[in-house]
Length: 138
Image (tube, rainbow, N blue to C red; front, side, top):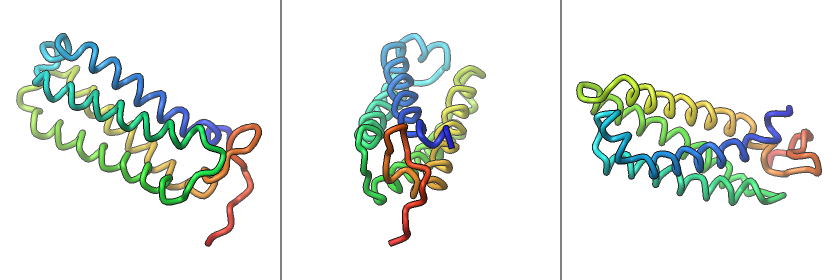
């Protein structure tokens, strides 16, 4: 149950960190990954936008179920987008680039599955984090 308490914070901090790093290093990563700089800037910007959304949920004590579901689905869609990027650019990109894109797909896909699984528990944050009491179905 301890991980549930921190999943939204993990989500927003990971997205923010990845976004800032990719945006700042896009020119260098472009050469190292053999990916277009614009694509890397897009990946970084998506991560920053996503971080803002997940942060807006993490800071609230009460969260709308629809927004938790949207967060989980957005993670799943971004995982699919990363797989699409990997498939499209696989013949051109380097192993570090492929590892980055596939790693991001696995990480955000896993977060999305956990957020979906724990969506009811994520509706209310308690004093020590997320309440471990189940939220009644509506």
